[in-house]
Image (cartoon, rainbow, N blue to C red):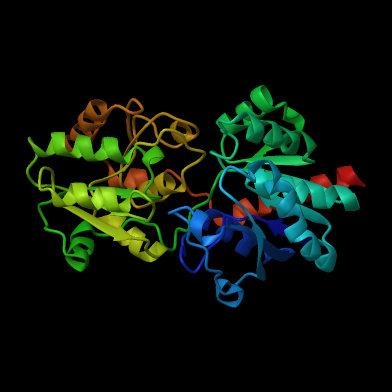
Length: 382
């Protein structure tokens, strides 16, 4: 089967960990099907470029997946209603040249909207994948355009039961076409390791109480609340340390807060390789994700695989990953509740080995489930 994957959520030279779950899926799919990835990325004029814009194409050959990056012109807000159509034009040549049996597009708007346009012209099977925030859109225009994609897809792939329910109730998705395909975890990287050795390698004191965050540095991840909570916990836990892995537009603000000396020591480590992330998880006492919304956060699956509990918010698919035996769920946008959750998690004794064995789903299984959904879509189209 020839599968063309269309997604902007794919590694970039300036953001090598971008779309890592989709990269893992594409790499495993390429072992069982003929796969090509086309990654459409909006290009802005220099005077209108968002601060978080980091587009520099990665080298497809180094990714281990046949990858092509294409661009289309855009302006913040102004071109939003047209970005799906512009994206469709950008990927049209790739669809024509590759001649796929099915187009599989992750990120509902504008990526999957563009893929929908390109497949409609050729009457190809079309599979769309929702990751989380792409289906929890706020503005009316984007929601209406996203709804068209959800209803048009021969199969809609979601990473959690929660997103499946949302797609059906708010976007009119046919439940018979929805497939829940949760993220996998690379057990060769994320597994139980000795905390002392990891701390020695990273320069973390043996007696530190280390709280770790991994992800984009954006307000929607609850990072301001995390800094407030860490300051509160620090008053009763002087050995507390905070480490953040990832980049994003909130970096300078968080760096300034870390430098003011009012809270615990903070390390802003930037984007790191999966192997380095796993070492930080091994060094940590807990991993936190106080997000406002989520799909099926892979970072929590990986944290558990490393034997580390989580303190997170009960949004999206998080309660499908974290329960009372593996972490503590706290109220959204509530720094005091987050502080109490962190303190409780630091005081509690966790069974690291039991945590590390909670998830055994690998990326090969994800690829197999994805291929099955694509085959169903092609069969329906025929």
